[in-house]
Amino acid sequence: MPDGALTALQKGLVAAAKAHPNLSALIGDRILDAPPHQETAFPYVVLRRFELEPGDTDGTTGFLVTFGPEVHSRRTPPQTLEAKRVGEQLVAAFHRQEGSISLIGFDLVRINFLTSSAEPENGDGDVIHRLAFEAHLDTAT
Image (cartoon, rainbow, N blue to C red; front, top):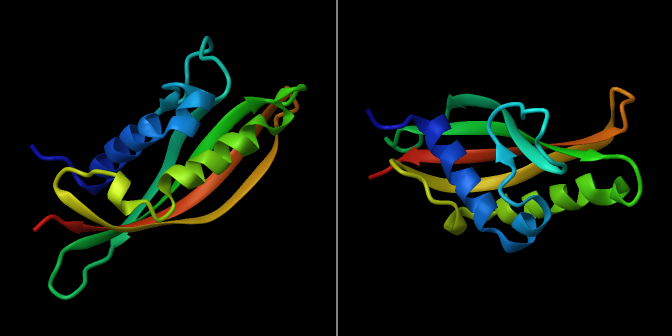
């Protein structure tokens, strides 16, 4: 069974993140699709919150996907800016990088950075940097 739009996009995003030299220098291969195990080293990225809606155009079946990666880091020095640095590299890896993100079964028409926010998480010394992107996918022709 071929992948649907969400699965194809997530696989493409993970591959692009791991291939981006500045991002991989910061997080290695710690880009996850589920909450991590307790032994996962900081910083790491979790791909969360994928929202899918129809985005058909000119007879092409398409989708609009809003997704929100989360960067998790420690708040203690010298890591106080770490989550923001990782977030900046996520933007560099994804924003308007349609040619660098390969999808199977879909064409990535566009991908745009929308917004981000960074804040302490639960008072436990961690920082979470939430980002939002929007992607437009068409079924491959």
